[in-house]
Length: 260
Image (tube, rainbow, N blue to C red):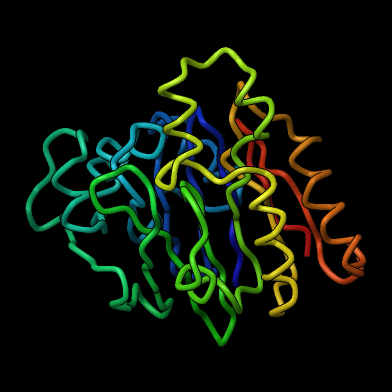
């Protein structure tokens, strides 16, 4: 057993769960602790069995409930030094803060964890890949642009939660103020549907079988638009979606399990 869930995903909050039936890892907690525990239970996991919380970066849509969850569950928080320094999560004992570095692998129980750098406007953000019995799962969101190093980091993932944040035209002609539009479109902003589609094709070519598109903007995207852009890119290049691989969109407020 090795499974990954998107608990919630979007501009309003993000949290994911990785489990091998023995070790259970919460990645980000951008909702209340109470709601996070409800979603963990919905995945068939007891919140009290969570082994650790991993944090990608300090923005509140990823950290809102990290402090309360860590204190209630008495589990360590793994994050980069920059993220630990920038998070506002209340009082946490020093021995509960574990500092990790991109490019330096570690283990939580018998699950291997590979943190990798991501281009985003945060203190020291990272994504995570997880390895168990030669199977690789990855969470890759909050990415301003794709790089060769980043592609190399996420290739070989059997399953991935991949950011597909915005439709470029919806963002450009939408209600956001110009500086915010430029931030999102910038090299340290968020991944567009178009870039997500190109990335999905690269991943499928390298063997990825399951993709959940995540972190969709509430104002500048729609699930059907994100899905269609990646679906068209894949099918136009000979990929049989549903047979060769599965493609889903993460629920904004609801748990999403990979279709395998």
